[in-house]
Amino acid sequence: MLEQRIRQHFHDSAQLKLQAAALLAEPLAQAVAILANALANGARVLACGNGGSAADAQHFAAELVGRFERERPELAAIALSTDTSILTAIGNDYGFDQVFARQVRALGQPGDVLLAISTSGHSVNVVEAVRAAQERDMHVVAFTGKGGGEMGALLRDVDVHLCVPHDRTARIQEVHLLMLHCICDGVDWTLMGEPEDKA
Image (cartoon, rainbow, N blue to C red; front, top):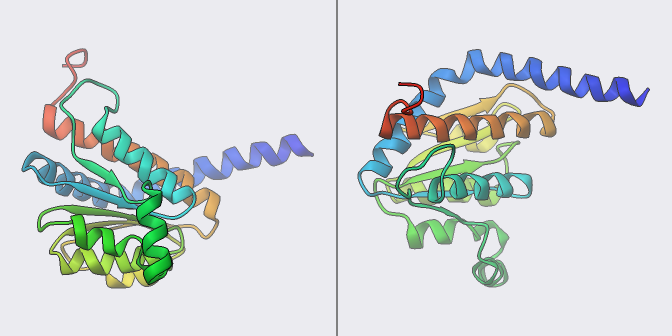
């Protein structure tokens, strides 16, 4: 029955989120600390991913530049998937593998943070962006699933790996979105303290 399939989606998503909370709360707190420190010191966040992960990167940048759930000063974030002229020029001249890496090398500075999203950990253009960020002495916060793939293997001790313990892309993306919201809330809390209505 269709209704049973729908209920199963909800059930599976809820169960995975509870499992991920136990595994990822600590590295999420580390990611918040890195991002909040960078933003408080005038650094920027560059975010990238493909497909649904590109949408997540854009969503995250919008929450920082605009706001999440309360008023605060603007925070510097750029989604690297949004400029079609840059994407098509780099894709045409250098190959799609370089569409994010060249932007990271052009825009990234030491102390900036790359938020790199790949459900498989094998997206070549995201992997190349991670390499470029490391060359630039940037921190990397990596969102993956399916064991982390090549991207997970590249990460250093100063980076943060948030690997969702699942193999299904839809479930991984659902947890990625929740983690992005956790980071937005955590950055606001770190920089501004408790909201006035909860203090």
